[in-house]
Length: 638
Image (spheres, rainbow, N blue to C red):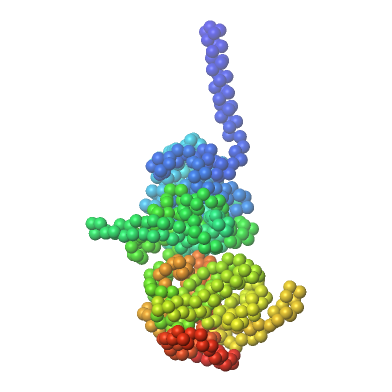
């Protein structure tokens, strides 16, 4: 052997040794300090069979997923709940967390879907295997599934530091047998209530994490039916974060719901099928009522707003997102799918759950939002025939007054006239001057005759009690009265008014005003029972078709925002989960109470409205009516 040959062999040996040492050293290299978002942006590749935009993952396309994914790498957070519609990337976010755990911070993982076959099997083949194949970092660590290799199959995949188990919620043996640091529960609302005879599937997998101090549990699902949704229950236990958009007008952040969208559409029939065209799509800010286009809203700043931030301390973040924030679906597409449902309950349920990201409320025998909106009617004038008296109910908030003007006729038949919002603090005179514009307005019948609000009830609860008292005293001549709701059992709907002190900032008495206490629970019962009346006439509630009057989806949702429930001791009215705003219900309650207190002589009003006043008598000064005793305001039946 020549010296040259020996030198070459030595060189090759040194090269091989260097490679061996390098490979060995790589096993001792500490993992990269990355968040899930950083890992996905750096390493994740989207598969062509599963993505309309295959190739490198870009979190910037779906910015709302960043905080969801990075909560997975926050050591303080142990539970993550995501309520999401379709087409927002929720499954890809789960896969990014899964890939991160397998690559950067390995441990035993259990990924649970509604059932083993076909759902879990299909998910493993189409989504997990495709991600491993197309993401080089994972492909190097996870062997291909082979039927004879017990460690790498469709349902089990090993990698350095752990094993991934993919199973169905209907398989109690799998759920209860494997300790796991990470748990993913996909489409939780579609899981069976019990895994065989073993009980709650989520409880079974939760028990598998007990030995891990750094465990993570991730629940993801589209919502289903209100009152039966486990993902809703989990969301309410967490931080309750909504992906919210800044209004370009008032700069308040709000979660965009279908009820905030207004649009016009036309329907044509072609080949026996309905076809729709949508135009003039607008977003109505639920705070200020100002209108913006979809283009304007998509350009606005967005962020997660938590309604229960205290849950951070308990290590539980929960998120809610719908398709109105999706970069892949336009609002027109969403509305067209809603119209295509053509009122069919099952089709509408699918649209509400999978696109609007909203719970479907099954109110068998009761009116729902769509049913209430469907009974709206053309009045033909500001005041329809049958209205004999108007009242106004006002709800006081920290930054606004909300009001409803309601018309009443014989036998408690009633008509919604206008529901509105006056932006401004209740301690500012300008806010009340704008309310005067509502109270003093003359609403006209078709024949030109008109009515003003005969009495107004203003809520004095909250942070501006003394300011409401003072403003009502100024308007005593207009029959504007402060009210306070009492929700105790057996509280009468309306009581004799009492004189109360008006205090200044120094707690000094500066005057007195009349205050009514009303039994709000009794009032809500009357409203809800009245809404069950199906035919115009006695106790029937009418609503105008013209949405400019404020009778839109937001109104319907607010009016139907509470339900009577038993708390173990007594019956009480509670907000239905998902119905945050109940001002419409309160305003209607106050307007009804005002009518009850007024004790109007409807026959006399009707006679007066039918009179034809000659021009020569139009300037005659009317005699002043004698004052009515306070007790007389309580006569009559509502």
